[in-house]
Length: 556
Image (cartoon, rainbow, N blue to C red; front, side, top):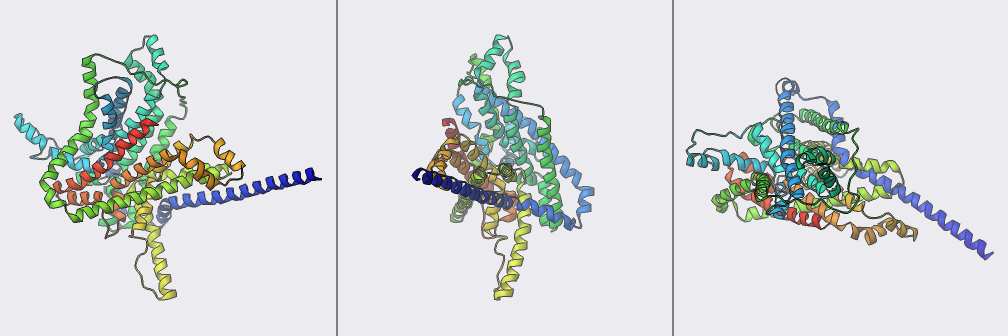
């Protein structure tokens, strides 16, 4: 009788645990879907708004400007793709494969251009090539007064965007090259294949997924750019969206341009996936050996150093030196108590956004993991598509529902309680942080997910078998194991928020400003030298976390 009672008790306990797991799974599924809907709301809003029809000037834009927007945007996409691949892949291979002087220093110096937003690089190079600028003075000193280089065009824009964005390709390519088994290169050497041919026939095809991953990020940033394109006078989709919204005061037209840009962005992504539909790549690293660096002659080492140094000089040192020169001329005029308060405000918004975004990313990863429904895990990845959408598009997608909600809420408060109030969400810090979260959720999601995948499922499963819930298991066991990924995510989101311009320009409250917007305002008012101080604050504030993150990744 005692055994039968014990057996019944065990069966009841198992049934109770299964019932609780099923209930929890449903709860986590609902939470996951709620987060995805929250993130997807801007895109849904734009889709719904399309049914309202275009604005009055849509016909004029289609006849006179649309081809210009499409042509210039595609020109930037193709030229920037070529240049970032040239700088990023070549630098990654040389640093990973060869020994040369200052190699360790070049590893992290090649990442530093990421700390400089493209629009700031554009401002600096405009000064370098301007009449009376650094290059003009050098040409005069050499007696080449007849040489004039006009960089304020779409070719110049493609150049400045490329030298500021190539580290995306460099980082992903270098990580792949470093982790390739040395036996591949040894086998090609034994077969008599030269270094040049081994790279193009063997390593480059194998590295394609990593290279394309970095390139996609570059193209998203190119299509998102507003500050550099506007300053250089190049018509792109983003400048067209701003012109329709602010100059023409036609939100409907801006929505149509946004929808068209979304189609182009996803067409590029789908085209790339279609291109590699029949390509299968598996890692050759079955042993734990890293690629062996090759020694060469002193002259070859000097040439390698020179090649690797070119993108660093172009993408970091020249812009920074130009900005430092301007800063010495305008320091007393710009640097005051108001500027310090603006800097603290900008840092505060970036830190707050980073914390909230990382929280949402962690929720999305683990809520979908705790759900028993298989399709939830696939849907969860839809929440990170915001990074593929330009900031101006996200800003418009958020303004539409928040403005509608504010109007409804104002009317309801007035009708029910006779309370008169202004906008409660639209035009406030809440809407701005919400937009940042939508845009940069993927930036936080990827490092946290990659770290969480290294944690064996047997660890949390053992905890759950002992009757410990998901949340307690996460905080006691899993969180300490993924702290590196969470810290990386915080740093990356902080840097991106600090640099973001188009989204901030549209959604920032009147009483709030950021360093990015301040630099843009100075440049727009033809006070380019005054833009140096806020630009340098952005650069050095972003550079320190970039260096720290590089060391963190090396330790891993």
